[in-house]
Image (tube, rainbow, N blue to C red; front, top):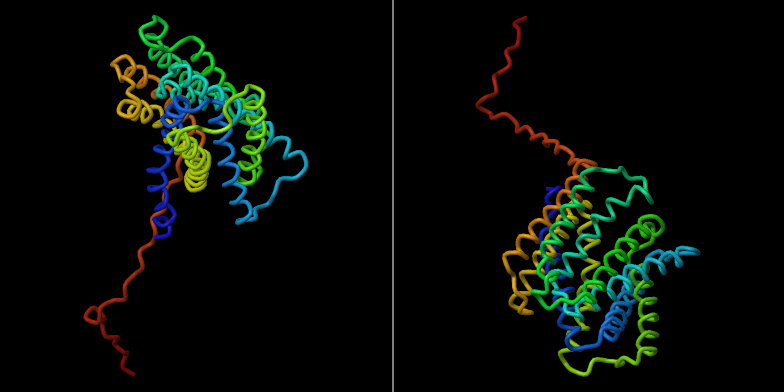
Length: 325
C-alpha cells in the first residue's frame, strides 16, 4: 500500500506535464503573432516572478546565500533570457512550433555529452550515438526548408540555434554550481533578473510596453502561469517522485505532442518527411538520454512483501495428547 500511495500522484502529474510543456511552444507561437517578442518575454517573466515570490512568502524555504545569488543570476540569464529569446525570435521569424520544440529537445543530448566535462559523469558512446541520430532527424525535418519548400528563413533558424546552446550551457552551469538552491527562490530570482533585463531591452528597442489585444494578454498570461510556474512545479514534483530517466522520457514526448497540437491550432502541416524526421530524432533522444540513464541507474528489484500467516482453523487443530502418568 505504501508503494502504491507514493506512485499514485505520478500518473496525474505526468498527464499534466506534457500538455503544459507543449503549450509553451504552441501558445508561444500564438503570442509572437499578436505581441512583440520582447514584450511577450517581459510579461511572461513579470507574471512568473510575482507568482513565485508569492510561493516563497507562503512556504518560507531556505534562501540562497552569498555567491549562490550570483550563480542563480548566471543560470537565469542562460536558461530564461538566452533560451527564450532565441526560441521566441525564431518563432516570430517563421520557425514552426514543432521544429522549435524538436531543437530544444536536443539540449538534453548535448548536456549528456558534455556532462563529464563539468560533473562527475561517465562518457558514453550511447550519448554520442543518440546525439548523431537526433541531429540526423533534425536535418530530415529541415531538409525541406533548406531547399526553400517552406517559409522558414535562415534568420529564424539562426535564432532557434542560439536558444539550444543557451539551454545547454544553463543546464550544465546549474548542475555545476546551482544544484543546492531551493526550487521556489531559485526560480523567483531567475525570473526577476530576467524581468529586469527584458524591461531594459523593451525600453531600449522601443517595443510596446504591453499587449494591445485581449488575445495577446491571454497568451502572455498563460505563458507566465502555465509553462513558467506550473510547468516547473510539475517538473520538479515528478522528478522528486521518480527519476531523471522518467522525466527524460516525458520530455521526449514534447516534440511529438507539439507537432500534433500545431496541426489544428496553428495550421502547421505534418508532412511525411516531418513525421519521419521526428521519429528519427525521438529515437536519438531515447538512445542518448533514456538508455544511458537506465544503465547508470538500473531499477531496484522489488522485494515481495511477506504475507501474514492466518491463524489455523479450529478444525485443523489437533488435540494435544497428554502422556499418561
